Length: 362
Figure 1 (cartoon, rainbow, N blue to C red):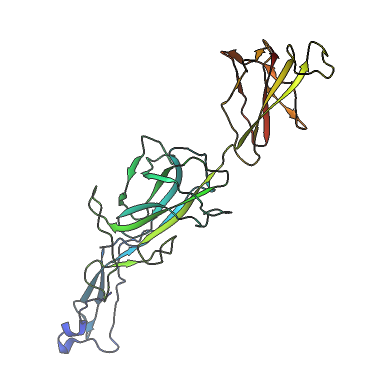
Figure 2 (tube, rainbow, N blue to C red):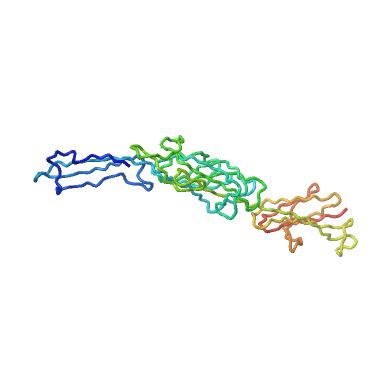
């Protein structure tokens, strides 16, 4: 910074100039106290010097001089993800949330324009392992209402942050919808980028800041001091960071088997499927390992018109042992209009539950 000063010697009459070994007194300069982000931009700092002297034994009026400088704007910001792992989502999930925090490390109140994008396939996961292999549909960026948790219908969608004071921070949420037909382990990587803009006008987005080129001026100049984020470089007035949506879903398979229980001729010894035979059907629902628990499972099985449902034969939540369906469930379910139906318990990944019923061959 350039400092305009006054030559003290030039202000003294020639006969009163301070001798080489005269008595000198210096007053330390005073300035505005510094904050964590530094002295606020636009602050005038005045440096004053006082020279006391005597002529012979007579103390003379002290000579003074001062110089005033204006503090320039240092732009610095960071954006961090506050999620400690990929956000786990399910296919067709609506308004899934990733969480970020912006810190204004500048010495000025600034606005920040915001941009949230879905990265292209092959982008490295924020947390690993794996890479981006599908696109989430970004709904928008939302500003936290102060409780640190996304509140749908309460937190406001924003395209910029307004009047963020020096040393202040804001919590932001990127909200997205997850498409169908995604498998466990699929990843969608998103990036939130904030760009510094001029502050000072409430409820109005300021112009994006640019660095002052050339020599220091008498006004408030701008210097970028930010680090390199994702998708940006150091000292560019912006900062980006990535976060992930990682799919965890239930992968269900259904297998239906039948066993002849008895017939009118052979009873239970090597029974055959002849009129009057009782056949037990087993619907086994399996959830692959490594995914999520499946809930709200409803099973419906059509009873052929060539058969008659055996009353009170439905068993729910049975097991399969060594590939063989066990008749160990609990009574329940319904039979109506030729359809057996029942609800199974929550099905954890790597588990199997069954619905069993019997019907008689006509």
